[in-house]
Length: 68
Image (tube, rainbow, N blue to C red; front, side, top):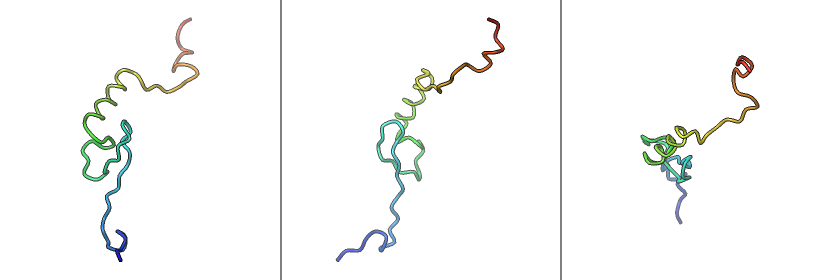
């Protein structure tokens, strides 16, 4: 009969999905956190630079201060 990992006191590394590609990635000792790789990190950075991510707003900041 086999024992479960919990009964053997074996540490199972915590993983999470990469925000870019959803690959399960270990959290500990990952230099690219929260991404799985430098490639996913750079793709995400490029999306920010390209303004692909936007926050919805009803009006722009300081729009009342601009002359019409």
